[in-house]
Amino acid sequence: MKHLLFLFLLVLVPLFINAQDDLLNEIDTDETDTDVIAVFKGLKIVNFESTKLVAHKELTFIVSHRFGSIDRGFDSFFGLDDAVTRLNFVYGVTEWLNVSVSRSSYQKIYEGALKYRLISQKVNGFPVTIVGYNSLMINTDYDTDNLPGLEFKHRVSYATQLLISRKMTDKLSLEIIPTYFHDNYVSNNEQDNSQFALGVGGRYKLGRRFSLNMDYGWHLNRADSSPFKNPFSIGLDLETGGHVFQMHFTNAQPMNTNYFLSQASGDWGEGIIYFGFNLSRTF
Image (cartoon, rainbow, N blue to C red; front, top):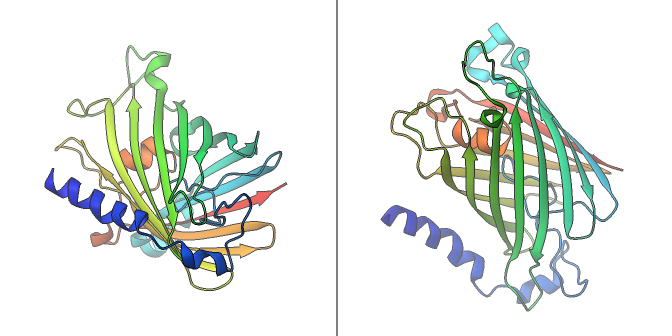
């Protein structure tokens, strides 16, 4: 509990310090009803959702790849032979509400999600942006031959997240992500179906079109017998005209919330790391 309190303080204290006076003159900050903009340029930090939303009536198509572990070398061409792909469509219903549908080749997962802005960070006003995110996943890879008694409800998982971000300076943005997720089926009998995690992430601008991004997910009630790790990812965002290209390294090959939080099989210490990218295009 002391470690949990320390982590909350470590992340939340900087989010609420009074540093907004300097934002008025920043390159990426505009004043539209005093909202602070360009907190993040991508819809995701790396694995976790950012507080950015697709604009009203815009459609964004995101292609995401996670290749196999680079530690296998030329045997799998540094993981390129073992790619996992996710296709995601996000539509801006209003300025504050997005809906999305996706399909991932990892366990053949279909997902529908809502992302909605509750409040925005203000210049000389409210100190953070708060966005809600709710998703429902259906795992179509489960096989009744291997899982006798399998019902449709066992394929269903869902997640609820609160995304809380603050643009600290024109270069630095931080985010904290309290997360609740539930899997109707878990393979480990010692693992609770209802699970909790705390995500933290950030973006640091390296140039006009480049930024360094990082995020980490702390699974708070992982079973002691679980072989999986907490997901840690680091990457680079590149803005190229109408899209953002995100390249990164992570120890989690799955890309859906419940799965990268609960089934990150890589290990940075042992070199079991997955290279990947997110490529988005807005129409």
